[in-house]
Length: 324
Image 1: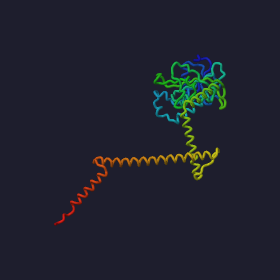
Image 2 (image 1 turned 90 degrees about the horizontal axis):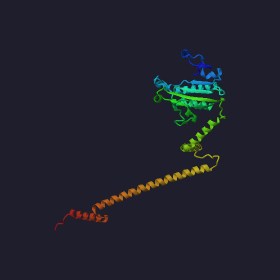
Image 3 (image 1 turned 60 degrees about the horizontal axis):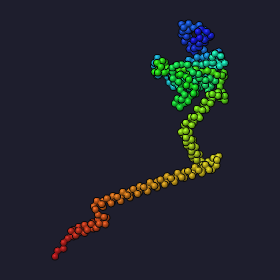
Image 4 (image 1 turned 45 degrees about the vertical axis):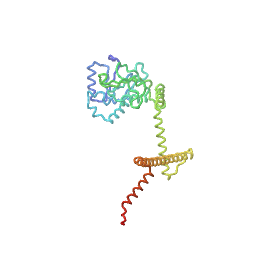
């Protein structure tokens, strides 16, 4: 790319890989390269002012499972969290070693062979909040844009300029590439904001609040429940007596009135249920009796008369006959 012009500094944190790096440079005929062995996080203290920086960060290797299937079994959540922390430190060091006032540079390329959002979009978004950088078009004719929203977490809208390469789509190793341009030297403080990024963030936050009113309702309901629980605890501690709020006694009176109204409603509902049960039992008894009478085709009074007549006949048959 440089045609052996300028100066190229190649740094590798692992000493055992230096020999392979030197061999590849000699094999490719590269003559303008200086090979060094430093911790990438401390490189800005050794040298800085580079026009362009390429950071091939160490990652979990989830994009090259076809070459190393053991990644699926060996990687744990702790390993990924550790690599994410290291990637954030390396990206900040790469940005600090780059010169924003360079006439021909000021660019930082961040790349990983991982497909996880934690190691890609999240790291770049963290760097954009800590340094004065913005994402530039990657210039690749293939690839999928980076994520702007992933499982409820939102990233900067500029993340669409980054590129994701999938093995099952592009027939290549899984890869993530993001090209950053340093707009200003120094560290971004909490009180100083870049105009473009700050405005876009505020717009996205306001849109989120408008689009998701259900979240606001849930938060208000949770807050009300927590307040009620706190009041109940205070009453238990004080022997059933309420505590006066800053507003006054009105809040306690309102809560007692609400409790009374709730109790009255429950009592009325219980009475209504009892009345319904009694009326249903009476209807069943009446319908049963009427059904028995209707089955014989006689009224109740007629049936009583028949019973009396039968009793008289039976008494007359059972009485002994008088002898002459």
